[in-house]
Amino acid sequence: MTPIRILLITCILALVATLVFIRQQTEPNSSAPLSTQGGDFTLNSAEGPVSLRDFRGQAVVLYIGYTYCPDVCPLSLAILGQALKQLPEEDAARVQGLFISVDPERDSLEHLRDYARFFHPSLIGLTADKATLDQVVQQYGAFYRRVEMRDSAMEYAVDHSSRLYLINPKGELVGSLSHSSSPDLLLRRIQELLND
Amino acid sequence: MRFSRMLAGLSLLASSTLLAQSPIEIEEAYVRAVPPTQANTAAFMRLINTSDQDISLVAAQAEVSAVTELHTHLEVEGVMQMRQIDQIIIPAQGQAELRPGGLHVMLIGLNKALTEGEMTSLQLRFSDDSNIEIALPVKSVMSGMMPHGHHKH
Image (cartoon, rainbow over all chains, first blue to last red; front, side, top):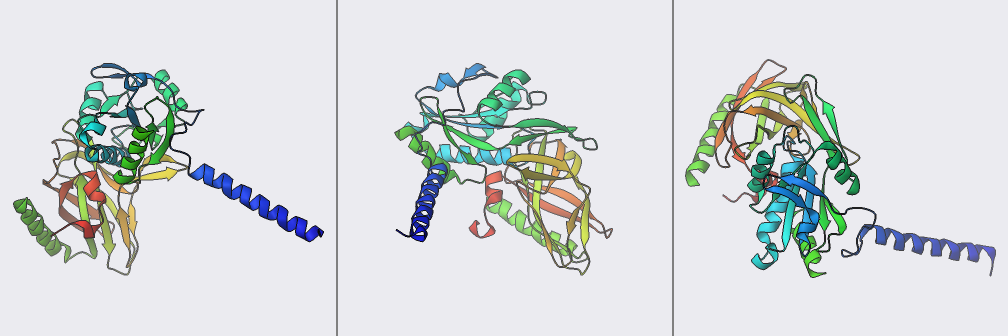
């Protein structure tokens, strides 16, 4: 073989390997857990402590935000609420939506309960002290930080990542969706979680 | 339903009459419906500048909130960052889009619940000293996101 031919074959092999790698990255098997992220937590709700393990056997969709959030949080919860409404009744009982507020200073447990229920009667609003929230946020590869707004009546904003986390009935985090996803896409992903 | 739609139609007529004096036109304005205990919400709309000069939205006052501010929400490497801004520039012969995940009018300190289907009013002040008062519907964040063509008449 000429050196050029060897080079060509090497290039083709490298290209194929790259494409396979990219495909694996962008289309992960929905049932395969993201082994390094996720895991159990216990937070507070208006009805008492709630742990992720309470929902073993159910698919869980988790969103982390705050109620002063003007758009992406209500939008994400509305997408979740809509997807839950579209599920057949027997499936809906096997899905739990959770909203975690990273603004416990302003979001009381009672307010979080009412806020979550506004988007779907089954949604649960949760929060905790900063140390506990920091731990959960880190576990899920999320992010938040308090930012002072000096001239605003809001006083501060909470910068935060915005993802709908998908957790399978074994309690494993298997992926996430952005707030620009359609309720139909979320519905399909929930059904994949239930069928695994 | 039909009555509220009629109201919406009437208010649209009313606002177009007001708009005749201003080079700014406003389309698809709405306020996001919130649960009763929620202290704040946001208004979204499209601002169209029909003049040959840039004009900015510099202030707003809502009927239903103690304070009304201009905000943006930037997405920086997956992190949403809400910030107060001094003005929203509407370029000459151009437009500014206020929509979820970006520019919005923030209503802080709501004095009443905003239920889907209601109407409320908002005053907007522009850099050319013109004022526009609009009547805008309260919508769910999802129906507000729907493209205009989706609404059946």
